[in-house]
Image 1 (cartoon, one colour):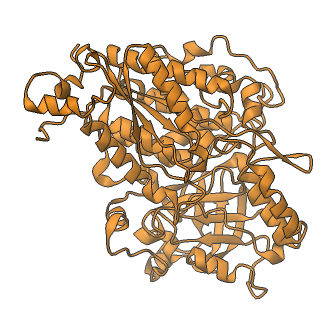
Image 2 (spheres, helix red, strand yellow; image 1 turned 90 degrees about the vertical axis):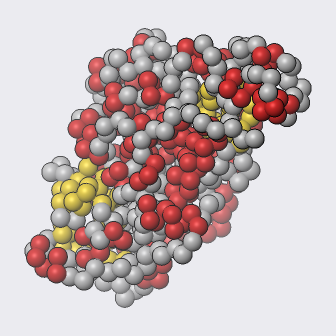
Length: 568
């Protein structure tokens, strides 16, 4: 089989000479002439993406495995997005990171790629890129951090930030104690140790078949992650030799397996927009309704924050993702393969649960029906999502009076005012925070509760928005309402005082206002982004709605790996 890289390196003309000579910085002649696959390591290591800062070490183990298998490893730094630091939201650049990585994979003389990600948007962007260029590819998730402790209790990064900050606002925790916990929360390298978006997307990558089975969830400091990385380097060479591409691995059955996995682990709602975007790049027929049809009856088996109490290193020692999937094996597509070429279900044969307090048996689930619920109604004709596993059961059917905020800044300005007309039965509505409106669809949907209600002991309320929320967050929060307000969705016509009706069991989200009256109202368009230039303008003009994955409309569908013209 002729290697793709040979299109650059083979031959005796000026162009092939140029391609080889600048790469001859220690590489022997046989690296270019001996039929050795050239494997890029798409590396999102960055000091400004703290959850990925250890990936250079992981990359070295991958390189060792590539060399051992007869390949040539090549480090390829790609766009890295640090969820905790990037403003206004890392989601604004997920598509940019995917597009840039796709173009670099296509443009360079490589035969396959190992994708190194961890923090929330890095694994999705890498998978979107790999799907678009369709070169042999495999993911190594960077792994969660170890559990930190404060005053003898474990801390879940993200989840306990939301919890402790609300206790400060309620007056039950001093600001000094809150700040003291800061040095205890992040104990080691690695991404969030809750079942937030980073952990969720690592699990999704494995469920899709795109990791060496058994890798997702391995803690970042665990030496077994480096062992797995070495094995993955060897596997990358094998993928090239066998011609196995992402389009062969990530089929519709693989995406349905991911949806089952999402429910069983209590994963982040952000996985919905990421999986839809990845499927769109492949041309796989996946819709918002598939999440409800496939995931609705799946039990929650993992007792992990934010839906439970444990953390990711507990999940790993209790048997890991394979033990979870073994419990729901009958719900998985038996034909969906992994990068090994074998079906996912074949890799579950030896899986066992070692701690049933962390991974529940299917006969004793944490919750019987834990999948992401898709809501529709006159408030969300394009759909909205809610994570019942992280919500208050008594609020899943609720009628309340809307208290509307037109932007995040409006929330900050008015939420804690003693004059705000709000009580615990109210429904907090936030608009202007969708893909176009913010822009970028930030993680602000779990907006804080009014201070005067916190003081009364209220810890959850129904909240509705066109935004996202962190996978580490919790509460009865309706998200991704489509179409968003900035795209003319019904949220733009809701007024404070309107009755809002939420019925998760019936999959309904409605404003109890006559359709004619709602349609006649002038939409509120204040607070929406109107960028004049650069990426933000391109994004706002071309981003799709959340129910289609919030990708750019011109990036759906794969473009393949072909490059037709020479550079000199």
